[in-house]
Image 1 (cartoon, rainbow, N blue to C red):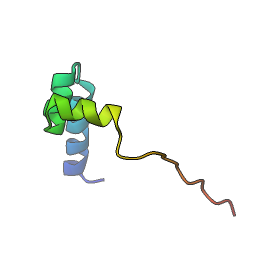
Image 2: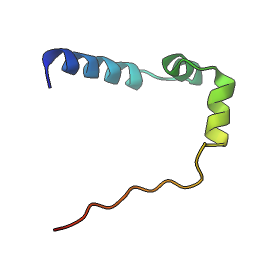
Image 3: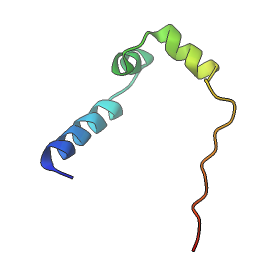
Image 4: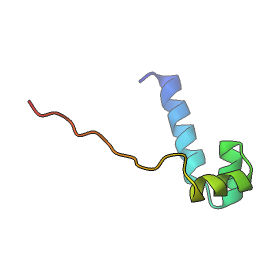
Length: 56
């Protein structure tokens, strides 16, 4: 990972870890609180699975 990418990653980490309220999360995601709550209550998917790794 180059220096710029590492700095961006560290900055994003700091911003994400500083979230303390729904308003700050909405600001980070650039969406309004109503839409965020709707997505939390009614996710756009029914089932989510993570495929298992194949062993050799």
